[in-house]
Every structure is written in C-alpha cells, then in structure tokens.
Length: 290
Image 1: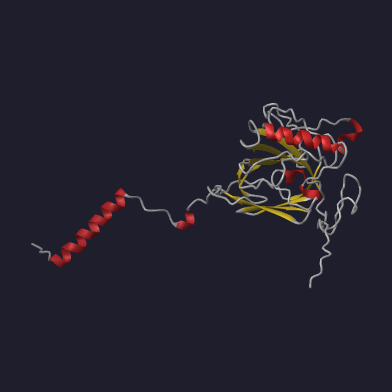
Image 2 (image 1 turned 180 degrees about the vertical axis):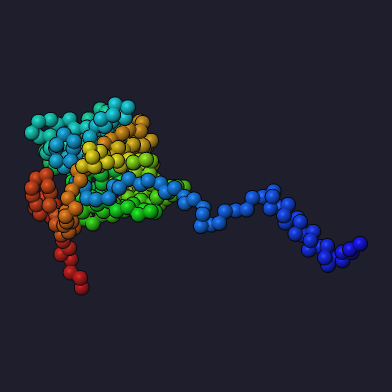
C-alpha cells in the first residue's frame, strides 16, 4: 500500500480546495475583455451667441415671457409700449410677485425713468451678476470641458465658471457672480447659482434682490441649433412672494465671429442714448499725488 507523507498530502489538499473554490466563484474575465463604460451623451453647446428674441427683435434688453404656459408666473415686464418701448423701461410695480419694498423701489425708479436715464450695472461699469448677465447684448461664448463650462462675455471680459457634477457648498461668501454648479439633463445644461451679493439687479428694470437669491438656468439648442434658449427660475424669499420664470434667446453666430475689447472704463458708451462720455464720464482724480 502506498503511503503519503505530510509533505505530499498538504499541497494536494490545498490544490483540491482551490479547485472547489474555482467552481464556486467564477473567474473574473480578463481586464481587456471588460465592457467599456457608456459615456453620457453631452449636447454640443459650444460656440458664440448673441441675444435675439424669437420674434426677430435684436438684442432685447430684458427677459421674455416664457412661451410654455406652465412656466408661470413670468418676470416683471415693461409697461411702456410703442416707439418708446426700447428706450424707456418702466416695470409693472403692482406685480404681485414683488414684496412691498421691491414694488416701492420699482415705482420710484419708473417715475425717474420719465425724466432721466436709469442706470443698470453694465452702463456704470459694475459686474452684472446673475441673472442680469443673461441680458447682455454683446457676444457670449460657451466652452465645454468634462468638468467645467466656461462662459465668456464680450462686455468687460466677463468670465463665469460652471463646475460640473458638484453640489453647491453649504456656506458661500456673497460675490458678484456667486458660485455656479451644473449638470446635463439630456440635451439641456442645467446651472444652479447661489452666493450672490445684493449689489446688482435682476433685470433691465434693476428689480432688486437679496443675498437669498438662487437662480436656475437651463440652456438648450432649438430651431436646428440656430438659437440657444435659456429658461430661468428665480427664487428669493427676501424680495419676491414666489419663485418665477423668465426666458431669453441667443442666436448662433458664425464661427468667424471675433470678440472686441470692451472695457467699460475706457470705452464708456451708453447704447440707449448713443452718447457718450458726457452722460457717463470717465472718473478722474484731480487730487495731487504729492
């Protein structure tokens, strides 16, 4: 009879256990045969765009009423009609969206609009902030990267950075453009912004807001990619009685479009009056340095 030594039995037992384990747990497929992860399809929103309403009005200075009736209430609209509609900007101060202090501000501003030109951020060389920057009438360029969307506005070389697939920080120090995070939902880029200071207005009427302001923007190409539509949801319990919606359109520009240098302090024009340096003079300091 054949005898087995311990040195012979132990390796054999281990080999047997390994064989049983191989039957119980299927071997992993070689790494090179593993299926590749399915990449999310990202809409191509890159390019240069300029504000233009769908009705053909070039470079409107305020928000449009959303065409979708479900997106109500809409934004404050201009009460001025006819030839003066693009020159004078008087909001409906009786709009129930407005908290009393905001309604009173717009009422007084409307009265002043009849005798003088009311300033907004972009014609006194202040950053426009969000959502007012959406109303800029000069070119906007979108640059898309895997982890960021960069929005470049011709006016004052303004740049916004939208960080993708991140959450808004719980604590933010208020700033002109706040902090923006984004993600894609199908063919739509969704941006959420918070942490905005209260030095800017909401729209062309300079409707006021507080540091509680939160803005959601949804960017989507329409009309075979010829227009970029932006749907905005604006929420601020300190300034409005409820969230409301607004809309803006940009028309795609040729790839050959070039940006100009537009620095407000050096190129201080007012596009409404055609004027000029007399109305918004360049600041000067006549105090001797020594």
